[in-house]
Image 1 (cartoon, helix red, strand yellow):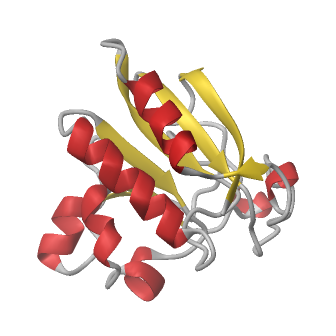
Image 2 (cartoon, one colour):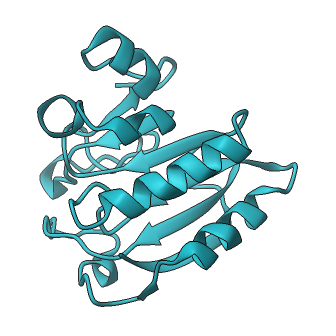
Length: 167
């Protein structure tokens, strides 16, 4: 797996000040994607144990509310193992901080049975659809995308939207 960049102070991808890592590789190629430089699976830098260590060190600051994993496509089969390794390491070290992940896949159709979901607090799912773009939405770019409470969804075995986020 590879990654494109790490943002040390991100206020646009989840609540509060966060660390964000943008993974490399996506096959969706959504029209007017905000991050087309992440589409190539061979681009960016190699994702290693040192990458995980660096991300965790950045998350240590008290003012960091959590970690956001974006893409590219974190839930692409080529990226899942690395995504879940990072997610597990993060939640083991920072159980009180939140982990948000963005994916073009749908939780209830494509991902619900994945073991690694247990480390994710919030999943923003669904491909970006340019014709449904809405700048007034929180944490997503188009109205078809959902902001999902993963622990509640796993318990209910169905999608439960995050409370307090306008639909």
